[in-house]
Image 1: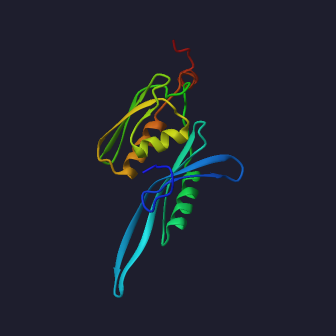
Image 2: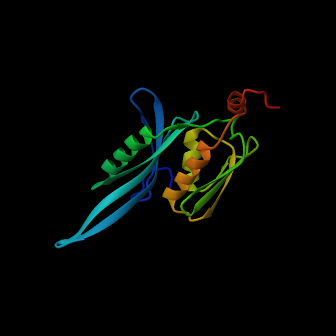
Length: 174
C-alpha cells in the first residue's frame, strides 16, 4: 500500500535524495515470511519498492532481509538498477495499452488534464513516480501487488511516442 506516513506493515512513502540525481521511493508492500525451525519460528521480510524521478524514469525492485530497513534498502538498490524511461505526452501516456503478468492484467488509458490518477495503490505508486498526473487504470484478475507492478511495467515498456514511431519507420506519422 502506498500511503502517507509510516505504518508498521504495508509500508509508507519515503523521499530521499540519491547520490547524483533526485529520486523518490515508495514502499508498495512489505511481507513477513516465517521459517519454522527446531527452536521456533524465524522471521524474515520481503519489500517491494518503486523508485522514480517524476520526469519519465521509473524502476521497481525486491529486497529480502531479516529486518525491514535492510530489505527496503536492498529493494531500492535493485529498483535503481532496473530503471526504464517512459514517454509522457503533456500529463498522461501517449495511448491505451493492456499488459499482463502472471494472473494480473492491467489496463492503462490516457485521460484529460485535470482527471488525476484513477488507480489502486500499486499502480498509483508507479504512476506518481513516473510523473503521469492524469490516467485511468483498471486491474483485472489477481490484485497481488507484485504481479500488478510487474504488469504495469510491461505496459509502460510497450508505450511508444509519436516521435519514436516516426524515427523507427523513417516516415512522418499524421
